[in-house]
Image (tube, rainbow, N blue to C red; front, side):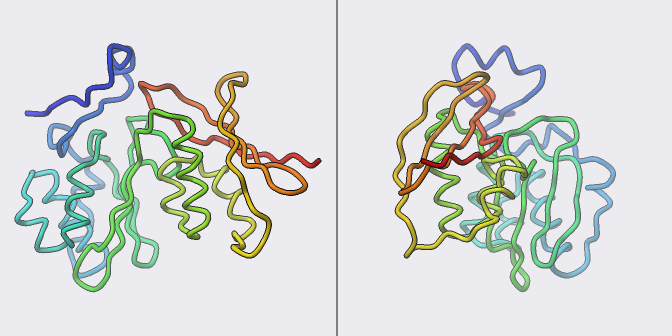
Length: 218
């Protein structure tokens, strides 16, 4: 039923630990905790309705509880379905993986519920270039969007980066690209007086993430 995401021959080596799909993964059943999640009104009820519609590959049902952008986002999720409902924090409800390792600290899907609909879906990303991971993380920091940052960076890296709020009137950051380092890549943003290094780990087939961040002073 599913079309495998084409990542090249190297992807075959990782299929034992990570399954990538280009359609809703109804072949990967939700766990008992997800299946028995609340079905009442927003936010948990709305989020679970969208989740179940996605598992059933029912875009019509999904459209009743989510905006078009949110529907398009969740139906484009490239990994098998998360198998655990992790509850809601305010208006943000999360579904996480317990048996599949995916890049980033989001570990699955997060839905933002506004009223009776899911208005935004964050999701773990499969990014094949270290530089793309670095620039996306920097852009998320500029916007002050932690969930977007967690899509492509480890929780610790996001915590380190967001300790300081990005100041558009502060020092200018200049992306210097990525260079190999032991176990991965170091992607640098220079600024007057120093540099920020994003340490990227992973592979092209499994996907890259920013695993940690460090700083250098001139």
